Length: 318
Image 1 (tube, rainbow, N blue to C red):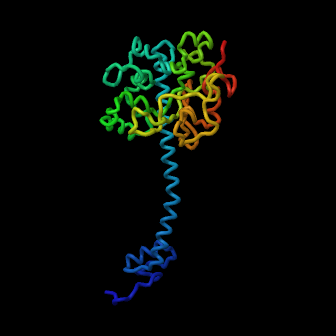
Image 2: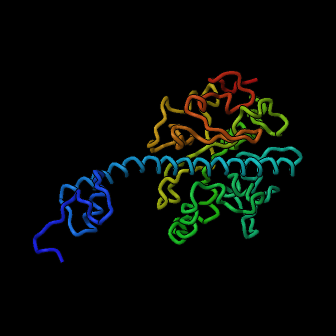
Image 3: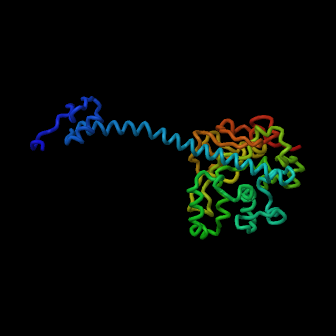
């Protein structure tokens, strides 16, 4: 037993056979083991641990971010496989981007995972019309299993606003579709006979019509604004559609000059595009490949319309 009040001398051999050391961590360990340590040594160890944590945390955050990017790239590949399978099953016809309501309420039957027919907006959005090609497994369409789980678990809350799970899960896929120029969109009147008489067919209707399939995006990382019908969910990082930087000379530029990740209206800021991967978005192209694109690249209309001849191109009357 050591005499009362006597303190072990740090820096001594301690246990017979141990060599003296100048390492503060090792000295503190030996001090604790042998029955004593100083406040200075504790503070030094805490400081060293703090430095180590400060070095490790950014690497962990970067690794986590790369993991999310990798998951979304894999989801984009899965989505393009389903997109191609749809075309094969429909004699080369591209999946309609946002078909007219009388199509999905009439001859175009869209079913949910229980085999129940969907109507109106649930069926107009692309997810349920492609769901059968990935066995109705929506994990590939979402950035996070947690978000997808929340949509399931909170049905009792948002059902009070008159919406269903089928409605909500088709609203927030992580990748939005280029509905204006791939498959066509009722929102842009692309299927209207008068519109087509004036402008012609402005969207790719058949997969073999694309002249530049490796340069035209079909889907890209998206983000939503708050939805009045689902206020409890806020703004998940996903949305079913994208708006191009330009459409017609009448509307002019549709995007802001600079990207704002906190914009309350992402549609007006970036056409619902989300640059959540280090300032870039995952972009899946008509030939099936996916790559990372930045703000300047995504503002180029040649990425959106197969017939575009320049970055500021718009549709014009024939």
